[in-house]
Length: 372
Ligand code: NAD
Ligand code: GLY
Image 1 (cartoon, helix red, strand yellow):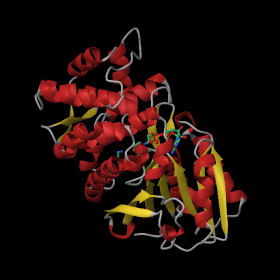
Image 2 (spheres, protein in one colour; image 1 turned 45 degrees about the vertical axis):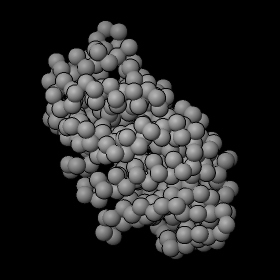
Image 3 (cartoon, helix red, strand yellow; image 1 turned 90 degrees about the vertical axis):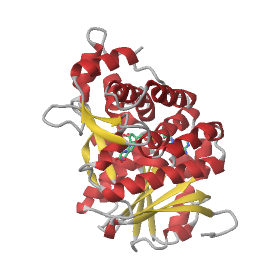
């Protein structure tokens, strides 16, 4: 699609879920292109949900484009940060909807990273038992993962993303231009979720990442477009088969069991989600090696790429007294746990993942050898 001389959709990836199907559009100058929103359900009002960092950069562009279709375009600005992915902040979205008399046709637009996207999706799932929403992800992590697939949530002090719903957006708009303002640390966090897709599904993509990592770190648009498209294709392939994570979808959580423990153990916001995932993948790769599924050369190859991406590869100490015990306690709260038994995503040979339990002794050895 070429809407004007600036706006260009370079790729379209479809999420196939029957009546809940939707496209992911990837390209340049998309945010401000009114044509992208023309096929969405008709409504009087749109509510753009953003945060204190992203709204000043992009809310005006998006709101102006939406004025072509909605008589009222409202904006609610949330405080920024993982620490605010909670009930009081979610309530701000409901306050804005109710104070403005928004009806059940109102369309919510999530303009921000994964935190804004996950909270807006959860608000959309529950306001008047469900209103349409659109994801306009502005971080690399959100463009390759969190905006796609319909997982929405807030955190609980005892566990990450523990309160939420599966609720699919109507459209995902990945505008490459917005990534130019993304801080380097956030870019690296997004690279963690991109790297993840290699060991779990496509080692050809992993080879490409090894060869093109410098271009990604330099934010070269062609490299970013390819990485985002391939990541979304793999996620679409997984979600299309297992929307509600009854099996296969769990592989998308490679590195997340260890990573979530790091995030909640340190206190939300200390390490970025992507940093936890990056380091968590190193730990999960070591576990895979101890289980005899991959060799040490694979673990080292993965660790090298994660480190080159600017991500931590040594886990933090969560407790001076019993560090491994502390990780184990936190990991038991994981959504993959069954009857108190932790289940890990492990690599079952390069390019293939599976979910399995592991003995506490082995997991302790992994944590001891992988923590600083
Ligand atoms: P984030 O939403 O906190 O965004 C990172 C930071 O970048 C924030 O300070 C944000 O304000 C800022 N920012 C966003 N876009 C910007 C831009 N274009 N320019 C400058 N600054 C910008 O973090 P994230 O990494 O995007 O998302 C992490 C969250 O996503 C976690 O809560 C995680 O649990 C969730 N997540 C969800 C899924 C899912 O399937 N739903 C998948 C992966 C991660
Ligand atoms: N990010 C993991 C999932 O969407 O299932």
